[in-house]
Picture (tube, rainbow, N blue to C red):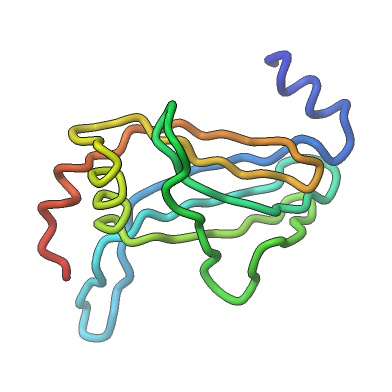
Length: 139
């Protein structure tokens, strides 16, 4: 177990948020697919409820690009009970355009940052294929 995970278990309400992302689409009527989305999941893997107050994307070393908004009817801030998760989505091409406008091409490193009610930041770093998603013909 890492030191960070050990400290998160000892500090009530401060830890346990697990972040993930994946590309995906919705299946519509007659098996047609929606445009491609980037789906972001925030799960409370801790033993205490955690308030999620902010979620944003930023290139590593850069300023925030997008404030993520929740899919569904639970706007931020929201409380996640132990074991509970919420999903956020953003059009893949929209994120690619925002990264390109900020001067990033190729496969830049991007941070997904979730800020909890105690001010703690939980970060997931991943690479995003800007040029590939810009070339999509989904609009």
